[in-house]
Image (cartoon, rainbow, N blue to C red; front, side, top):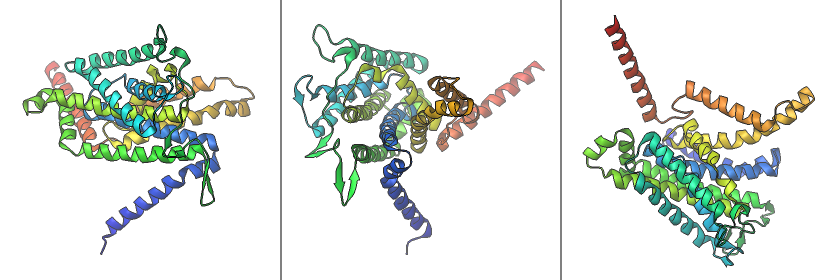
Length: 367
């Protein structure tokens, strides 16, 4: 006999699966085909946020240049699957190659920064991300490698076997557009990454990362090889970034250095902080909110025109203003994020208690 809780869990799983399968058709019918593409980009940002969560959320290493690994994966796919070099490698070879190359860049970044912490690590990683973008922007002379600021176009769409994802297919009388097909591909890869992150979180490696995040000196004293664990965190996070970059290049068909600027790195960090650092459901929620809400706020211009008769504040400026206000409110009233992990909540409560005790002792000493 199946217990009620187990039966409820199975029903929840079935309903969630049905919702994920039907979601692109529901969005297409209610909001239009463009919002299905927004769903596709949401899944890509979830992949990026999950990768950065390993570095920032698990290991506690503040990385502000994470977008560089996204760029590495995207450019490797673009250069080896476009007329730029005349090479057209298959998707099943390019995606693992991009992930491995991004992981190598992650180790390259992690090796010289092993002794850095906090703000110093953030500054170095920020510089690394900008260096990668500047290289991509200028490697068009004397030998044209990246095509400079013009970017790489005519990138081969994702193809598995003889199945092209940029063509509309009809299955059992149901028409699947390219946006729908990319959604299902990205969803499968996102679920695989979530499974990997859950297994890492409950493994010895995940506990070692948490120990380094809490107290690196104590972790090293307990026998944890902090050097290798940090490098592994950088490599694993970069791997997921490289996978997302390859998917982005095949999906978009065109990439340029402007797609990998500093603001993108900041946005991914904000997704983790807003949703709940170190908590996978929180990270997913943060990625969904910060991808969907800016697109929804584009309609503020039409709203101003309908109510006031003209556009008083540019929608792009208003979107960033509301975005900043929302982040400030979250940091004031939900400092652990919208869906924080239990461990993070306990840490904040403990830190608040220690701060109160210190303030009380200082007050007593003054008296």
